Image 1: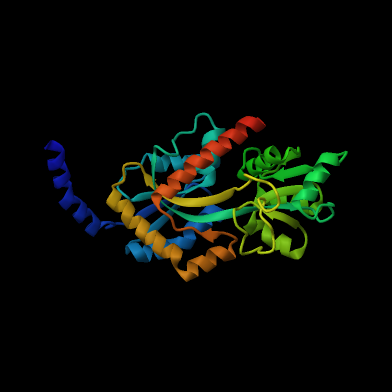
Image 2: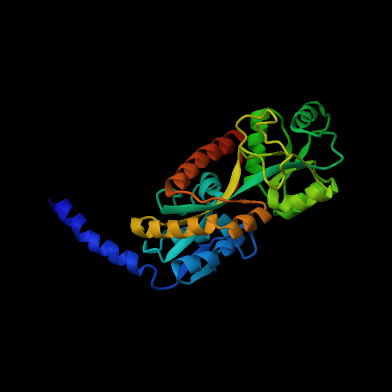
Length: 318
């Protein structure tokens, strides 16, 4: 009886909350600097969400420590729907398995709303490398007297881990060369300083189109609209190599379900609009409206996947 009374007491409160929410500006924490991929995703959906919620969304960039500073701050905020976080595969699938003392739990401390976008990775090589497809790259890596070098955005970065996964699945071994970010790593491959890189499509696409890089395969389950003639790793004979980057909207754990439903409905509507679908496509990613359960499932799957990769490859970060 006590539980029934409590439940009945919450009904008018929930209806009132839905009618009023949001009645003041909503803060959107982006745990990366302005101008980066996660920040661009947030600013892409910000106008539509502002219109859908009929309230201002204020973007608050809180960079540092691989996204963990802003994420930890968001996790500690009141669960009232007025502070949200733009999470990513880095903050919610990679960082938690790389760092021992990360100040938040990616599952327990957050309530997902929806994915915002997904970002495929593409394996690219210097055009002079005598490998036109994945099979030839694997053969070259196994027979070359000098090991091939793989550039990355840094030890423990997402593209580094995707590269380690590729090596685990194919049995080849590259020499990992970490750089200070994706752009320097890409320039290293373009200049011939490194042989290959696994990068997100958006930054690599202009160099693929210009011929300064040769693309061999995409890492997603299906082909990329931006590179429709490029096979997937699965099509190229590498099973289990699927990997995507992504951004997602999450709230602090304990946020009322009715608020999460309101946010999900608003965001999904934005993500399904033709303009946003085309905008993300032009950025090399794909609009990804989803349910909260789909987000949670993906977080859990990727946490397990990258934990295995980190352990087997012996990846260490300070």
